[in-house]
Amino acid sequence: MEFKIVKINQEFKNVVVSHKVLIENELEKQKVEIMSKLEKGQVLEGTVKNITSYGVFMDLGGVDGLLHITDISWGRINHPEEVLKLDDRINVVILDFDEEKKRIALGLKQLTAQPWESLDQNLNANDKVKGKVVVLTDYGAFVEIIPGVEGLIHVSEMSWSQHLRSPQDFLKVGDEVETVVLSIDRDEHKMSLGLKQLTPDPWGEILTKYPVSSKHKAKVRNFTNFGCLLS
Image 1 (cartoon, one colour):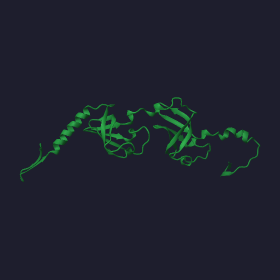
Image 2 (cartoon, helix red, strand yellow):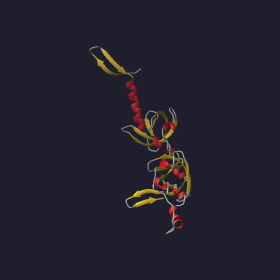
Image 3 (spheres, helix red, strand yellow):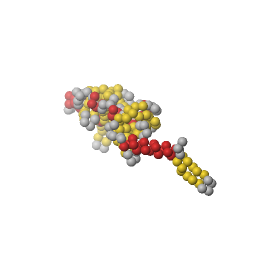
Image 4 (cartoon, helix red, strand yellow):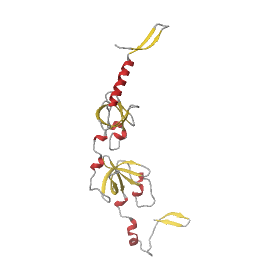
């Protein structure tokens, strides 16, 4: 075996040698050589060597690269383990790299078509569309139309009532819902959806159902300093 002298102690007539240093030096040379040949958009085969909550570290045959969770799938995933496991060998594409810091950003979803390109080209505003609720927030719900394509139902589009409640009062994650497309921007990959539009606007028939001078029974909803609100 070959060794490198790393320390000589004349007093104790002791010599410290290391084989590991030679290996590390050789690996460092390999990394520099591999990094010099990398190009953005290049597809390489790698092995999953570590999985974290934010991504996967891949062994590319001498250098490591990070496959971030957002670049694993076009659809939403909560953890990389939903898609990959240790020692998986997969093809990945180089998104970016830094030779000085020896950092490589990888992508997996980029090897497949962008889902928005598969969305029905005839889908337009005012069309009805079905999907699954995948995320609830304070301001609305995200509905997956097809894997990788989501639309937002804002809480203000969930009910005609002016007494808005939280999205959790109307929907829960996993619900299959029918919605109305309010707007769609294929270039920006954005879609606005509505639930209340599936039912008539109560104000549309207000003059027919409640003409001036007609009498009706109602429930007191609230008192104010200028009067009371009825429903």
